[in-house]
Structures are given as structure tokens and as C-alpha cells.
Length: 403
Ligand code: LMR
Image (cartoon, rainbow, N blue to C red):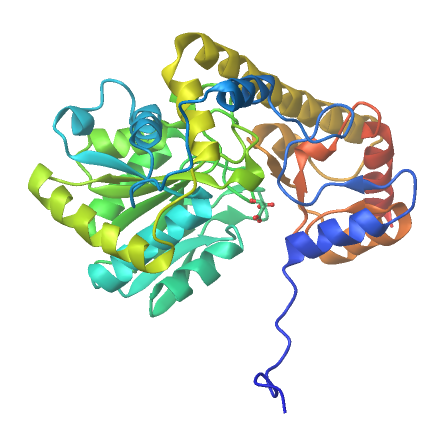
């Protein structure tokens, strides 16, 4: 008898199952609007030219070796990543109350933050938006939280933020609950609070003694502007909050499979931070000991060299602009086709995704009839659209909605 006899098969991971189904589909006009990964106008993955260049420099650099990194990672990377998030003039950085820790992409940062908050700091309950990135739940339950709850976020009627519902749910949350907030380009809805709405959210978080955990997977990628995309985190820090922020460099550097992430921890004092770091060091040592170097060194090199930094800024602008133009293109076509409904949300939403409002039947219809793949929630990856397939996709959505 097998050592694992009797266990049940786990459910598939929707987003990866979708990629698999798309890959094996032989239809020539198939379109993948599923997994959140950038695609060029030719529907190809994009290795950023600045990344290629740095990798060539690294390959030629005989001084680099394969020694272990420290448990908390490459300092040149984590310092630059934290500075990119908090801004050069951050009061927390100036006071020595903020620090970065290299992690295994944004997911790894979430896991380390979750373990620290649940196991070390004794927090029991965590909230995320409804809907949110589907992996938040699994990561946080595995990290040790006893309760995973959600707050209202998306209003299907207006296809925008349900601020009233969100504030009500946060007000009703038990004190000391951890609140996951998307720093920018909310996944999956593409709907972000306005600066004034962030202010109201911050007030409730302070009033109810909740703890903010930011997930920042799209800084720079969302609007092309690193400062604008860091607005929420920076305003919380300016208002004196302690917080953690989980940064991914998968999207903004196109380094999906290099697992480059950073966990920024902002505390009220230097002394608390030193103790926190020593505990996080033990958590990481017990999980994976220390992180890999390659991707982190690529990012560190780009962030710390003025010329390469400018080259990278051009790359993120290229990606952000292409997405913005696909949003406009899709909306324009749906309006031209007279597709029932209001499609303003396509251009109002920001970042990689649009929450189209398509229902499960329509999503299935699009897949079965047109070989267009998207999440059951109706989320589409805007990068899967190109000038070559926009007419096809818009026509298909029009057909699905009119059915
Ligand atoms: C997504 O949301 O599609 C990406 O962040 C990929 C993932 O891991 O889910």
C-alpha cells in the first residue's frame, strides 16, 4: 500500500490550468487572457532589454560567485527596493525604522509577513478584499492565521469600488486584525481607491486598531509612474502607521520565474525593528534558509545605476502604455458594436487586469466558441490583447453578451 494511499486529489489551480488548456488548444485564433503575464504586440513574452543587458554584464563579471547570500538576502537589492517603495525622502527610512528583506517574489514576501504576524506577533485574523488574488487565502492560512475573512470591495452594479461596504466591514473587524490592501492596480478588479478614499480607509484602520499589510505587485507597471503607484503606501507611512508591504518584481521587471521579491517592514522605532528582524531571520532560516541571487542582482543593478535605471523606466512605460491603449481599443470596439451595457470601467480600471463583469456562462461560451481563455470571474489580462486580436475579442464578447 502506498504511503499516501487514501488522500484525495486537490483542486486544480485555475490560473495555471487555464494556461495549460490554452497551450494545448490548436485553434489558430485562440487568445489567452488568463494568467497575469505581460505579452508584446506579437503576443510574446518580453524579456526587458535592460534585463538582457544586465545579465550579459553579470555573465562577464568574474568577480561574481555562487556563495550563499545572507538569510535576509542581498542588501543592495532590498535597500533599493525599499527605497523605491517608500521614496527617497521617506521619514521612516531617515529614522532607520524601515527595512527590506529579500523574499521569493511577492508570494514569498506574503508568506514571511504572514508567518511573522501570525506566529511571532500572535495575530489570529486576516482580512482581504472580496474578490482578491485567489492565492492570498492559501498563503495566509498556511502561514498560521486562524481566521481568513473578507471585506466588501467590488460593487457589481456600478463596476467600481464599494467604499461604503468596505468601511462598514473594516469597522466591524475585531481589533488587531490584519488587513490586506492592494497597493495599486487591484488584482483582479483593476479598481483602486482614490486618494480621498484611501484617507477614509486609513482612518478606520487607525480607529479600529487594525494592521495594514500591503501587497504591491505592480509598482510602475500600473501607471508607468513609480511614485504615483506607491501613493497609498507612502501616505500610510507619512501618517505614522506601522505596516508591512510585500513587493513583487515579477511584473515590473518581467522576472516572473526568477522569484524576486522584497518585504518592507516599517515600525515605530529602530529598537523594535531590530528585534523583528532577528525573528524574521529565524523564520526564513527555518523555511528556505536564504534566497537566490540572480534575479535580485539584476534588479539591484538596474535600481542602483542611473543609466540602467532610466532604461528600465522606459521599459515599464512601454508596458503600461501598451495596456492603456488596449483598454481604449477594447472599449471603443464594444461601443461601436453596440454591445449592451456600459463599458467605461474598462478604461477606468488600472493595471494588468480588467474585471469585465462577464458572468460564468459568458466566460464559458467565449472559451468553447471562440477559444478565448479568461478566469471564471470574468477577469481578463489586458496584455493578452493586441491590435491583431482586438476585433476578434470584441466581436466575441459582443456575441456572448447578446446571446
Ligand atoms: C495572476 O494573478 O494571474 C498572476 O499573479 C499569476 C498568479 O500567480 O496567480
